[in-house]
Length: 429
Image (tube, rainbow, N blue to C red; front, side, top):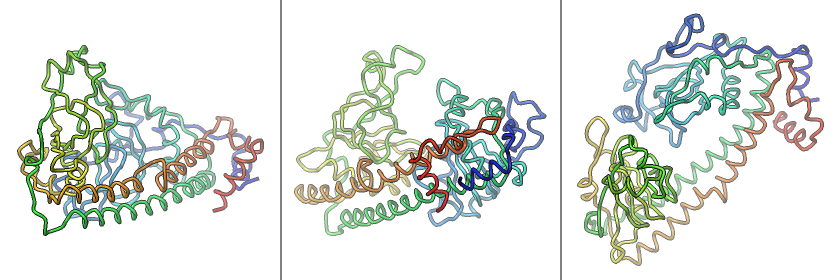
């Protein structure tokens, strides 16, 4: 019998108490449609939209920004720049809009437009336990998000969720087991990050030869264009067979498919236009400005995409992609206005070094190999990280599934010796 089994038997032989989430947590604001007695106190925050955070972002800062989306790259600022947006504490949050996810943070921070909660009494409910618990209920939380465009959660439904609150000793043992899994994932992620930095160093070195003449992007392209957006109010324009790309899908990678498709009628009645495969696409608006991608299929785009059809007689399109990827921060710095937008002319005027075509091809071969090592989910560290994450999710759901009479999936572990051995290994780490 494991330590967790012993704690369950000793401390809660008659069952686990379930309570509504609102009764054990404090949130960041008063929510519409939620009874006053469900929110006797609030913990108010100020929020930065991702585009607004650009103005105070500082790579040398030590105050992290908590975005609403799933984190792909950590962003920081300083305490001075954060000003009265700076907060400190131990929190759990879900996004106010977009893809449902659960995040945990302890320490100083500034936040995007998240719905933020913390335990009313950490002697009864551990915040880290709450994080693991809500993560295990992400499908239920996602079902409370509504809306035709950007979806938002029904906070009444979220706060009304009934959650198990076992004795603190049980919570801490579950947290210890699950954190062992997440620490293994974190170690692998750190190693992958180091590999990526190594790759970036070699990429920067290879693409920064000062003895090579620089050329403007416009001088190596067959065509440069942007796209358009069919009216969203006309349902006949959407749901067709024509792939249509938005800037949120432009993320330093290959575009093999799009999330949205439009119809021939939508194409005819908008500025959207076909571009051939192997164009270099640069995002021009908002939070994604400066990001680049390559399309492996013919597709159409919205007006916020700058589409570069490269002249293959003078340049390798993948070489141009790597050069622009290397210049991401510079391109981003060229943005104007509150949303830091750029335009076609800005992209046309960007200069990149242009060695002979055969040398470009050699550089692309080297950089493609590094890219594959770092990003291919079928090999190496990324595959191991994905496997560890799935293992964590499996045991998280096992450990946090309680019936109100106190029974858990753990009580059936003796019937599955492989599961028992793997869980015991995690518990003993």
